[in-house]
Length: 504
Image (cartoon, rainbow, N blue to C red; front, top):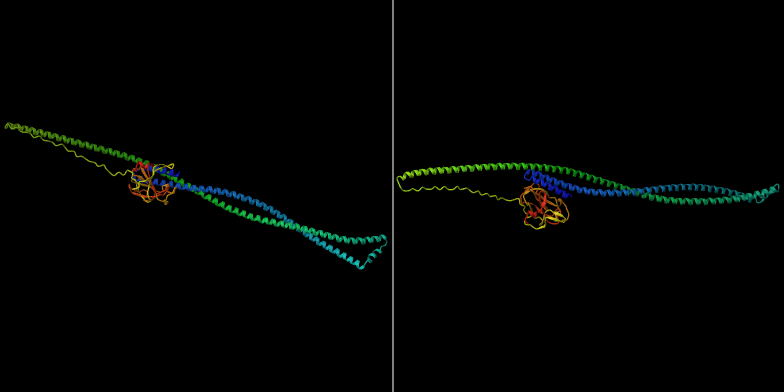
């Protein structure tokens, strides 16, 4: 699209330049304007290419940013879930720790109770042992004395019952104390078992807590990395956006400059047209005046010559008549004295000789187009439709480095000599597809010629070249699959068939 637009601009500008071909100074100025427009278009094409690259980056980075945001959302959900689980785990740990604390208190109290019970048992056992010892030492006398000392039978029974109750009480007391101690130990074992279970549960929860903390660290690290990547992408997006804005501003300024140049060209065209009209009018007036003066001069000369001829003729006639009269008079006089006849001589007046003027109008004709590749005439591709598009010139197959000459005299208005890809290829690399090329505007301002795909250009912009002057050498730069010269003839900026202007 940009290539077509560039060709239209160049064609328009060349057409404008052609209108001023008769004015060398204006031609140089407008040639420079054409070159400036072409350079602006090339710069805009490069800017648009960079804008497309930036837009591709924007699309990619925008997609990356969306992916990072989705990834961060997933990480945030995982972090929130993990935090909730960790809070639940911490609550469970606190509950277990409280349970363990309560069990420790119960165990502590149970151990104190057992210790006290053991002391009571020990005390009872000591008292029982002392009573047994006393009974053993005193024998049954004490019991008998106790019974004998009864005042009556009821007192005896009471004392006997009392002694029996005391013995039974001691036995039951010891048995109960032992049973309680056994129960206390069993309860202590139960409490200790419960504590061990809680300690194991606590250990398991702490292990899970450690795993969760490790997972949380990994998630937070991944989130930090994602945030850094997101910031990097945001920075790239900013750079790409600023790059697009900068290039669009350059294109806007280039459009304004191009518009100004085109307005200057139009003004110059109008001025040149006006000057050409004034010059033509002046020349026509001078020519008419000169022709009138020459005509008047010629008429005056013819009139003077005619008057001179008539005067000479009249004088000759008068002289002849006078001589004839004198001669007749003389003859009449002589006749009187002689009868011999006298013959009058007849005077012959020669005709005037008019000199013939020969004019040589032959001169060297430089208006015809010459062959651009001396000694090489093989056409590998002609003008016309090719591969679905118009091939605007002819391709002259050549060996690498063959000489390329100006087909006609004129001024070089555009060159490109920066392409180093001098090898066959099926893609556009530089020079807008022409590679290293030259455009020459010819003296009449109507025609221009283009020479493309050259290996090297040896002329420069604004240089005047004669027909047959070497301007470069055959190559295969730009969009070219092999060594050849692409040659175009343009009339008023539009490509025409070179076959109509060259003999081949």
